[in-house]
Image 1 (spheres, rainbow, N blue to C red):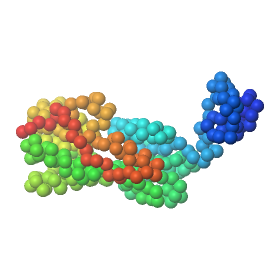
Image 2 (tube, one colour):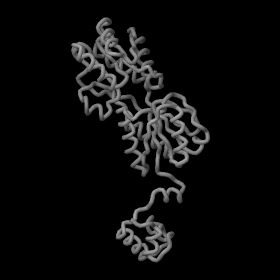
Image 3 (cartoon, rainbow, N blue to C red):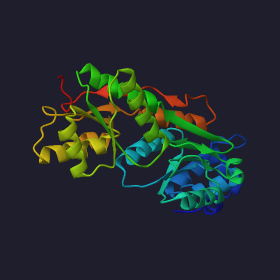
Image 4 (tube, rainbow, N blue to C red):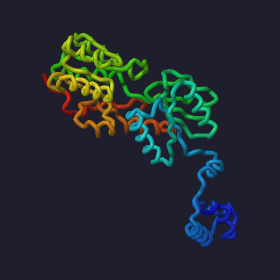
Length: 315
């Protein structure tokens, strides 16, 4: 592979003329353009993206930050975002972080590399984005909000998600509904739990929430309190609960129904029979990229749609 300087020398022209030919710019004769393009193909010339970005002052890289890469949900979400960015000529550079300090360090590195924008899942809610960063670079925050200039929070109405989960199970005849969730106090986790509690109260039902339940605690609650349905915060918890219940003699959905949330493509490939509420991956990705491009976008995605499977039955 040769450089643009070498290509210019081979063709007997300046680098500026080579640049005009390769990018279809005017002020160059047709014969000269053809000679340069033919030589570029013959010698395998490919433009250096870093040089092009330095010359134009515009990067085509978008930084992505997630709390962990072992989350199937994050993998599927950012794969959708990567595909959406690719439609507009951008590439995603994804990195995991373990805490707030590492999160802020990544932002500084992205700023030094002049990334076009960043899309992040913060390790906690309401992390303040340094003004020195957000003044120059747009930030899209998913699942948990951040604070800062040019920072946008793209989200789902998670309270509505919790309410819809209860409504669906109630319509199937369930009245004793257990909610499985996480102890981490993040926006999406708290909002789904809030929606669950609100709708249970409105229906005159008693709420019951287990956070990070172990096997013994889950079995004890299900057997003693005679729950007929479980609403899990996500599909990972739902599948873990199903495994625990079935390994201990309880049949799903005959003895107890289980409803998850997300319907991420990877988990659905592993457990296609799960009844779940489908997270709007495509809408979140599309809205995030539209914001980065300075276009109008809905910052609250549509309501989750039900994916019917075989883990919830009618009483």
